[in-house]
Image (tube, rainbow, N blue to C red):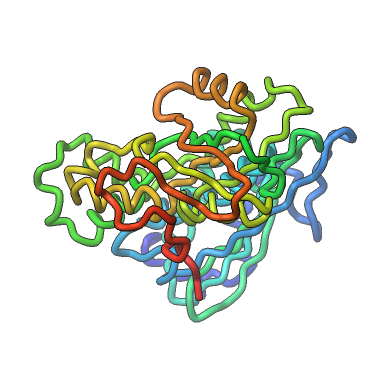
Length: 333
């Protein structure tokens, strides 16, 4: 039987596990659990994400390699959103027996490629039979307790910082679903939009810059996986505050504007989702320092307010409402 046509059911559970254990460091897997040493002065951060075929990915928009990459990036992004450095991940893989082994191995190759960028090991997991393919990843990280980022500690007067561009993943998805669109885009613009959707990068690179900020300076925040507007909403809700967003400060990728126009691009920037940037709230002084240090595409987009509502200023006719519509972010139900 040709290797690329070998099916999961042909190998069986143990045969498949033997193949997949090659992606883990030797000596870590084989028992009922992985043992990971942690620093006694730090806290363990654990996060789990489930990705399901037909909901989070499909053959129309993602290769098996991209499925593995995106699933891993989503979980590492959750660690970054907590200020945590990754220690390792485990994966629960559910598969129909008719899936090819080649597809499964390409998923793991995508995970491994993403993990390698952040020196993070795959330390175990489980597989089971299912009618639909799904990946349930648990990521483990550690953070100094005073430096942990939380959604509930934003304070009126804090500046709101975003670490990069938004709306690109949504634009990339549109191009993948409708390849005939975007004929006015350059090859570089098209590639940047598609890559943003298929192979996002969690912003773990921001953590060393946050480590320079004194621990007594609270940092509230989360990632923007469900949309920039949703991130601001959740931070405000958890902190019992409101926000004011300056629409003119929202950086928009030129290729996105060329693809759908200024107004739709603005809507995708706020509500597109799956950009995996960080949305951080901290004092104005340190927010400005952070923007200077991180540089390109990092910006202050507004401030936290006492009044529990989210207003948008400087619309210039690009939106119909000055009060942020908080129901546009992605929700499963």
